[in-house]
Length: 271
Image (cartoon, rainbow, N blue to C red; front, top):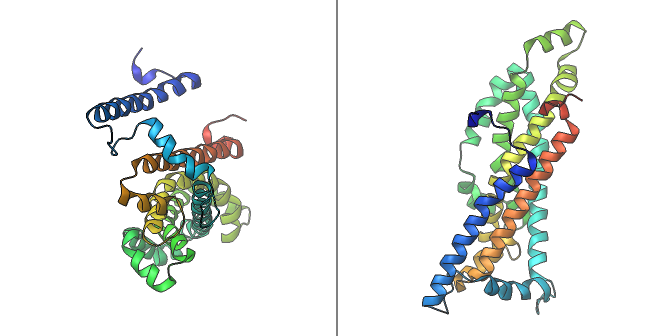
């Protein structure tokens, strides 16, 4: 049987997916052990016990100044900013994407502006945001929103605009107006696509969040990574990066499951 025709069972897919991760961990352990054999005080590739020792105070010991458990406070602060930014971007993308996709005059008027904003590197706008909005939470959330909204809008608008013309004609035959078509025809079909677009935006959203926290913040996962880098504290940086990756994976899986349960018809389910 050709490989292109092979179907992988879910349990086998999990095992196959774990193989490269385990190989990467083994390669890291080999390199770390080699470096520590040559230099027991090496800080570039810490051993697992070194990372445990570096993370225990952040996980289980309250900070002497703030009284907070640093790791969990950083996580909560970052997730609050990310959640707010993703929420605003998702709602904005759905509304604007539907309007652009269903109404050609609006698409012709606003489409070029959205395209222009989408091609601007959001990180380049960070100094402007900090100057205009200050160094508080607003600028950090705004960077996430500005960074992912235009791309999501273009995706939703293109998807809605590509819906079969027959559906629009049938709805008009039954007496539906433009807004009814938008809400009764386009919206239900756009929702699973919106979740898919949100999943694709998770990676860039994390990048914008970490960038904003690194430049102007006093708490957060990105702030902590860039704070300890001056001390070459890889025993903290690596676990923080791994934690961010785990959070992103959990969010992606949760969105995928939400889409499958809420819109099974969009994933080829028969019922």
